[in-house]
Length: 253
Ligand code: UDP
Image (tube, rainbow, N blue to C red; front, top):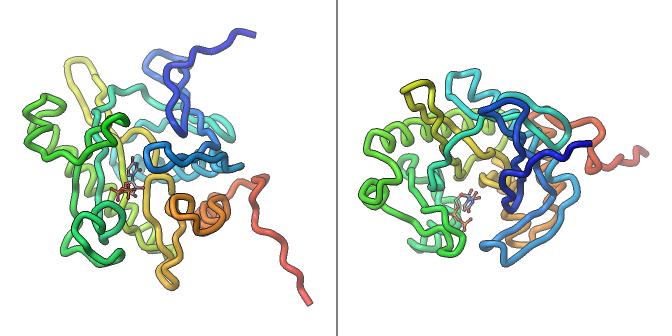
């Protein structure tokens, strides 16, 4: 059988050549990494869950008119996506202080921000993805002022959508990261949401208990990552039926 061509392998996903020009196959691995890959583990079932969850969020965004790279899910671990030119930025939206922001500013995690804040990190593992002002992005030509205005507008729409969806299932969206890609349609360029949206790239807290349902469970050793992601998938109604980490049966007396 002919082997398909691997285009790129990252920490959590692999990209293969797609069936048609302009498409790629995105494969979700079970690998979990944190602190710039200093901490590593394999979490059985994570790839399957993130494939489903990213499908769910991207489909929803497409449905409300926020363009994404998602075309369709192919199987348990793979989805067909549009090939984009990735802008080398991590676009982070924060609703509540947490993680690096809480640390940098000495704020308590969970403090509500006066309004959603959008910030940018330059994607470079060797440099540890440093926070960069918009001024740098434009001066270095990574994106234009027009691109940046469009990216902020996209990021805020994604934030409203994700916050609302998560609120509906009793989860607070603390912050998240997206990546943006360019696609060319003839002479026109469009910016679309790319990469993935999953508990690997969001902070999700249970509204009632504050329980972490995201990658902080792994970063901070707070329990089973697979159980946390399964809970998010279960609440959203996207749990695949034959997942290995289905909720354990409870004994009825
Ligand atoms: N994030 C991510 N990839 C990164 C860095 C951050 O997906 O390389 C996400 C992270 O999961 C969180 C948000 O972006 O939802 C903000 O992360 P923060 O800047 O607080 O960094 P961290 O504390 O994760 O180092």
